Length: 77
Picture 1 (tube, rainbow, N blue to C red):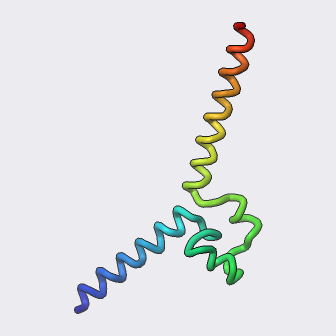
Picture 2 (picture 1 turned 120 degrees about the vertical axis):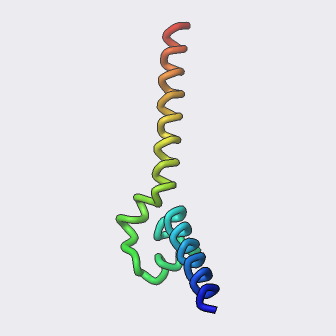
Picture 3 (picture 1 turned 90 degrees about the vertical axis):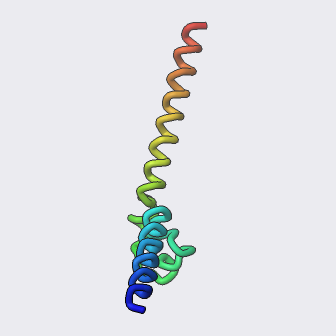
């Protein structure tokens, strides 16, 4: 019984950790932390989760590359 409880506890903690990592503290569990006022909304909302920040950085890099490509292509023609 103790091993089963331990496995369930570890699985639950991993799920909570992944949820907060992917969604950030503002969006985790449907925004329940934000509604309760546990997290300061200004600083963490703009930053997002690490996954969201990485995605935004990749998106910016793709846009910058497309802009550079367009400038070079326009100068060549």
